[in-house]
Image (cartoon, rainbow, N blue to C red; front, side, top):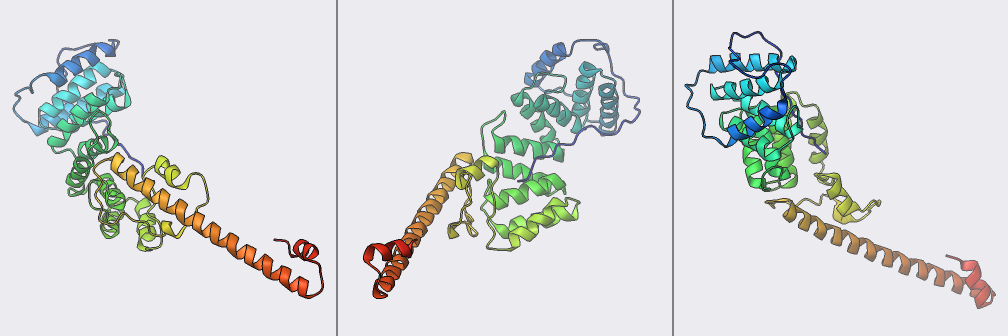
Length: 301
């Protein structure tokens, strides 16, 4: 199973960007939490974009964060985004996703990820896509998830390439397609994701089951058993586009039913074959002079 990877906080770089007035190093972060929520719902500030100054603000925000001046750092990350460095918005989204220095709030995380994504930050695009896939802070929408994965993947962001490969592997917002999954895995491998090599090799074999998105999906089909049904060979929902987890779970339940029925049929066939072998052995032993009861005992199972 492929896991989401979130990487934030650039290396500390000195910056001349002013922090302005704000809370001191010992101030309560909870106050800033409320301020950030208010700012999330307020109209966007009309600041002249200045990417260079935005980058300087971002660097200064990193320095504040590493000095445990959380309230000031959040304000500075937001200002960095407003000045044209969308990484600032993405960082604030990360804080709210993880509850780092603020009360965890997925809806607020989605708000800041969206601002970062719309500003062009590929990490925010991927994380926003993940929120849409997981239904975290926003209604599940796998087509939207795949669209955001693609936007970031088209810009060469490796974790988005991994996510898009996974989307094609399982039909998450796109029509399920092994070949396209392998294609995006190859791009991710070329950009340094070594785990993609495993999926390229695995998916090339059409007899290999594509696997499962989550352990919950695996349990739904496998039920903690060693399954032997040929229904699992390949078992791709080829060409199917799932709009949400409900649709995919319904398909998996159908797969589980087919597996159960196939294995039950195989079991019945084995029982018939075993009975036939037993009956043949009884007849053979009876022909050798044994009584029926003795022949039945000796024939065994």
